[in-house]
Amino acid sequence: MKTVVRDVMTSRVVWVTKDAPYKEVAARLRENGVSAFPVLDDEGKVIGVVSEADLLTKEALDGGYDGMPGMITGLLRRKEQGKARGITAADLMTHPAVTISPDAAVENAARLMYKSKIERLPVVDADGRLTGIITRADVLSVFDRSDDELRAEITGDVLLGDFLVDPAAIMVTVSNGVVTLTGVPENNELGHEIVQRVRHVQGVVAVRDRLSYFSPEG
Image 1 (cartoon, one colour):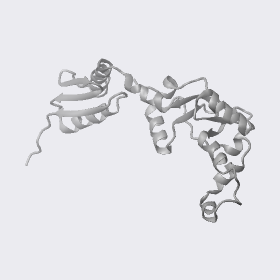
Image 2: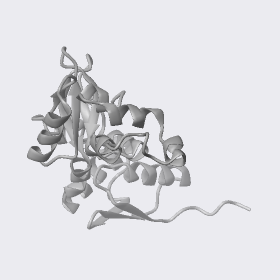
Image 3: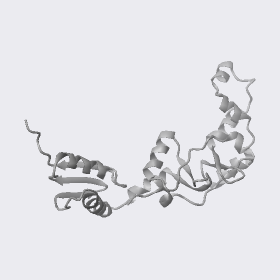
Image 4: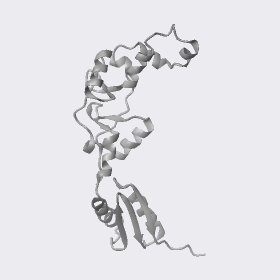
């Protein structure tokens, strides 16, 4: 069974409006013990994300640009300069926000976090309205599945359900999320397909392919 974002996300989310002043944003980050949260427009749609890093830009450059060495000033990107002058969440936020659907697979959330180098994703509905948030810890929760649960899915859903293979023909053992497959598949192509499919079962840490393949005729 595939775990989707709505299964592991947090539905009670801390957020701010686009007009929230700098001091309020900083205070709410501190009070709620989070490193970032979504910024919403007047219709409740996610338009950006404001983080501690965004606020630190202003703190680090608070002395202004005139007193800074020319070389450092030249290295600052334009958006960083804008954030340093910002006074509201809309000024400070990173936009557009990287978001995900509640119906997306957890693997998609993991790939998006990895690719975007972020720790959390706002979860939005079809209209772009905030419904929750998913973090790296939420994504990793799929690895909490027991070995018995993984083995049951592989033998029942994968071997028998997807490939119509008698589970007695291929032995499945699971230890700490590592799956070992032994036995003789009907043909080499089927064996490789089974291994690839098992790799994508949620909660599987790794797959050891110990299947006996047929040698090519030569």
